[in-house]
Amino acid sequence: MTSSMTHGSTLQDTPLLEIDALLDDPGIRIIVCCGAGGVGKTTTAAALGVRAAERGRRAVVLTIDPARRLAQSMGIDLLDNTPRRVDGVEGDGELHAMMLDMKRTFDEIVEAHADPSRARAILDNPFYQSLSAGFAGTQEYMAMEKLGQLRARDEWDLIVVDTPPSRSALDFLDAPKRLGSFLDGKFIRLLMAPAKMGGRAGMKFLNVGMSMMTGTLGKLLGGQFLRDVQTFVAAMDTMFGGFRTRADATYRLLQAPGTAFLVVAAPERDALREAAYFVERLAAEEMPLAGLVLNRVHGSGAARLSAERALAAAENLDEGRIVDQGAGKAAERGSTGSSPTPSAVEPDSEYPYEPKPEPEPESEPEPESESGRPSAPPTSQLTAGLLRLHAERMQVLSREQRTRDRFTALHPEVAVTEVAALPGDVHDLAGLRAIGDRLASGGLPAGAG
Image (cartoon, rainbow, N blue to C red; front, side):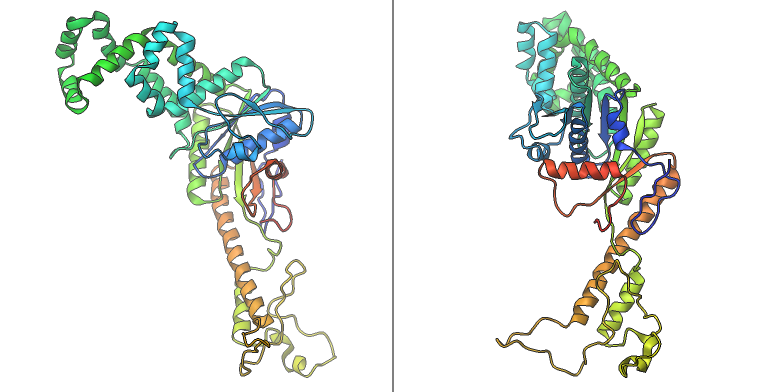
């Protein structure tokens, strides 16, 4: 199926991403929205959740966005680590939303897999507190853990995941493996050995076996840090294998046919370059890609008037030249003969600001109002300004089209849907519905932008 998405040009031979078919498919249980930072992943995930619920799904949206825009748009005072019902959803479905609390998620794992005394020792450990609050990759790992928990509960038939904001969209895939490897790696096992041996013998083993490493760490961080790490490792001994096991299980879940990845991008060079890289990575990892959501695309209701023609007409007006050059002197004499030759800027029924053929005389002084203040500028000046604004918009459209074409040339097999840029921020369910409508329509409504 090909798309006929138009806003001054046509995307040919590009498959159309059919959002409603994706949301209605009962076999799809997880939708992951991924992409570079700042491209609208959170809004897209929330809009998908609203649309899915209003089409009959029991959906939950898991966001990792610290800006809390999702809570505001859904009318919830505060999102936390527990799914909360969203009121105001129309239709037969239900929508719940939650925001990942990575430390609380880590705490829940400890509490679930350790006896109370050992759990308390872990939770109070300074090294654990640093690890759970901000260790590199912890947020992405805990997002995967929470996704696995939600899927295991089988309470929702659709989970929409907003991936963490990061410098690289690949972190969501890489970080869980990195953290799992760290917690189950040789370094941890080496630290575990002296703790198991206990007391001075353990420290002697540590000093002999890892003298260079511990010497460096001791100078940088002090002996107390090493003792905190050893205590943490000893308490976590029985849990390390579980981290790797769960990470691997969730990774397989992301590869399963019931998962669909949506790459979200803006029509900008850097965002689409990252999107192309992510598409290739998903293919290499054998993860199911549903398609590309091209967000915040600009359009025009007067796309037939090119930037070049608009600028030429504006210059004619500014310089006081007759725009309708083809009519010549006949227009000045008020000729009623045959129709004049078409003007330099052809009137366009879709473009409401047609230039006036008669410029204001340059020699006349600027008119003043009764109060002595200058009156409004003449119509020709207003028209020239509007023509220049239109030219700027058309240049933006042309740049977005070239950028998009480069992506589709690299990945012609990737289905695409476009979302028109809205005039303001989304702050309620009505705004999320509007985004959902644009996601489903796959193109720009007339006059959008």
